[in-house]
Length: 220
Image (tube, rainbow, N blue to C red; front, side, top):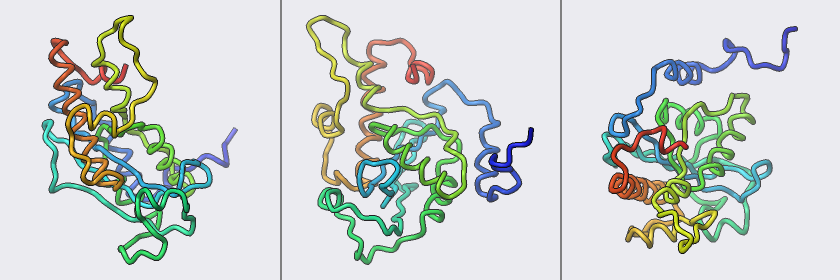
């Protein structure tokens, strides 16, 4: 039976079709050959259904180097603004910063991220916010593999009855632990940059105790 509610490929915008085609390429298991997009979102709050993305910031990791000049940042026009979140990220409704529509922001981000592996701290939150925005705009969810630095950090902790592993670690906690500057904390681009440095430090620590670190190992 034909599903009238299924989005026809032909009806999707070209930028999405171009994005989807990139996933036909076979991914590599070697970390050094993998391209990563480290991202962060600033939002009006933490409710996936009712809150909205105000800014997406991202940096690329290529050959395990942060491609600072290839950074990405886009501010989004929204009607929803959370009074509790504004003091944290400082993005106000009447700010004069240039903004684009949610769909334009998604197109820019999709073009930027391509088929790279996404990295974020507490990644499920950022991905759910982006996927909900995609669905609101009649688009499918992201296809990218993703890694969560909070989860990855736990792989560096020695398994011992003397060490208690927390369920989650904040970005502030791990930035302090690895002596990473928090100068631009709570901006999307700043948090993406901090997360990129954190990821590289976690990988370096894992390589100290494991002969070979592959993408599959990080995903487990």
